Amino acid sequence: AYASMAEHAGITLPQALEKRYCNCEKQLATSDEETDAAKELAAELSQYGPGPGKELEQGSAERVDWFQNWLDRTSSESATGGMGEGGDSEGNALSRDQLWEMLQNNPRLRDMAESSGLGLDRLLINDQEPMRTVRVAKLEELKPAVEAHSALKWDDRLADACGCEGIVLRDDESDGTAQVRFPPPLGFKAWLPTSMLQELTQPCKRVKACETQQLLEAVEAHSALKWDDRLAKLSGQEGFVVQHDKEDATLQVRFPSVSLTAWLPESTLTYLEDSQPTTEAPATPAESEDKDETV
Image (tube, rainbow, N blue to C red; front, side, top):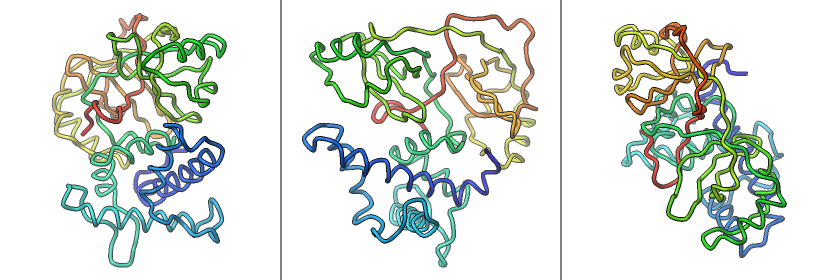
């Protein structure tokens, strides 16, 4: 459940890192070391140096504290890169602003925040318009298609994605592939043949954003959100609802006119009665690892 960002800033990101670390260790232990997937996992784990001690039980408070300390060190050491200073001299948790800076400036942490399922992604504002929702073909269709494609390589994790829904981040028309992001519990991205993806349709709710000053005051007053100057572009703009979190009264809205997707207080949005189903499904925004820009 999503409480306040004040709580999440000091607890949930270290917990997400600890959980991700455990998952990477397990996947690496059962993977062929020569595969690209195994090399990526090893590279991800290497950023933690020797990692938490084996004496620390998985999921324990002591082990989570180790990742909190790692975050603090990482933040301090990367200050010259615009990530800001870490926790205080006693090693306390990162503030919301410090966490925001870290997520915006570190693509790997952004991916972890997205995959954690803990609501951290709502601090991120996307310049790139999300694309569409798709369903992946069955295993007996997908695997031969991937193996037959000169630009792709089969990974056993793709078997778990068969029949599942994902979000297309971008298309490569030159070779007929698309990069798809799969939300938790899968939590990974993959390039797949476009022919193996069934595009889904769903009705969209249309909303209109309030004027800038009202939006600014509402965002700054909400514990889970942070103002970004680009939100000023949303004044009076119409958009499509992507997600609705009733627990803290926020909506994730896509504004095609300004190519922006962001979480906003529900009180700042007016529902438009003429909302009609569209052929384009509103997609959860996500950043690709190298080309998509997120600030």
